[in-house]
Image (cartoon, rainbow, N blue to C red; front, side, top):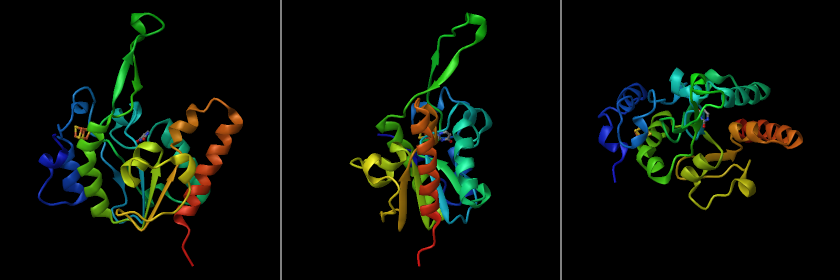
Length: 213
Ligand code: URA
Ligand code: SF4
């Protein structure tokens, strides 16, 4: 099947990769989306944070984690004392996948674009971009937000509920850790549970940046 390899530039710098990913058509997601949302941040980052895919806001702005989930992430980073500009932020899939919902307030209200999970073919197709980003940045630590990036990095058997918050070694990185996805925190209806997940996200980020003695 088709992957983004076909769109890989010869020079694998982040700038060249970003440019090339801008015209990637390796899977159907590029069609309805506004633009490619490539990773962003410090090219020499010690910490790389990987999300699932851009959301509605990211699709419009063209940058990762600028919507509501990004605000949850920013708040957790702030608590740990990590400057967002120090890190490199990216996603497993670089185009927004959505379904258009029928408007509730009549046709003049406009359709809402509801996030839809990327399937395994799309994740597979987009994977070369993520691999190239990791190779270019060479972070000391990778944090995976939620099940999609966790399974992309740790393998399909990875279970977030049992492995969350543990620093593990993978073929990708010496220090790799999975934690809650900020959007999953926002979707949690129970407030007590939601606040606990926020605290756990913060705790896990702290673990990720802790310098080992
Ligand atoms: N959710 C993600 O997984 N990534 C983003 O960039 C924004 C929301
Ligand atoms: Fe290419 Fe990834 Fe976009 Fe699919 S989602 S078109 S593989 S950049």
